[in-house]
Image 1 (cartoon, rainbow, N blue to C red):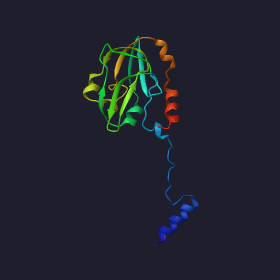
Image 2 (image 1 turned 135 degrees about the horizontal axis):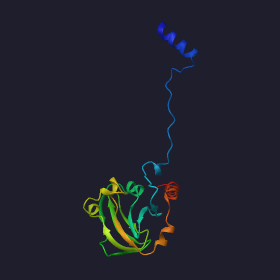
Image 3 (image 1 turned 180 degrees about the horizontal axis):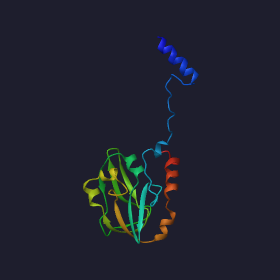
Image 4 (image 1 turned 90 degrees about the horizontal axis):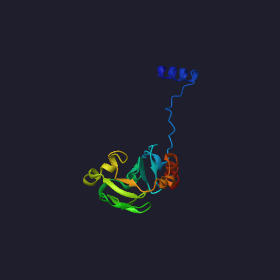
Length: 163
């Protein structure tokens, strides 16, 4: 008992608290807690991303969209040679929660589709920006890229949309 009294007195002199301090929680908007937004890509407001290399655009859904969908269980992707048009659906991705159209952020001709995603759709959840890409398109009009969002604007869009 005397030891406890001495410890309390020492704590008072040293201005230490005997009560544990609880750290304030870091407040991160719910919409950004799980979303990765690479800086080198362009984004659409409907949550698709584009990576341009020369006249080829690789397209997929964003990390944010993948988290919103949940576990992807099916992907219906267009075959090579198919034309896609900016703002129009080109694929359907189904998850345990819902089926969702995927809209093309650019116009062009499909030159490749991701066979891994077709056979193992959950790849989209594991790595939407690397192994989970959906299609590659030969760009028809590079000026369409100007209307897409950069990473900072896309983050703002996610935060303001409250998803």
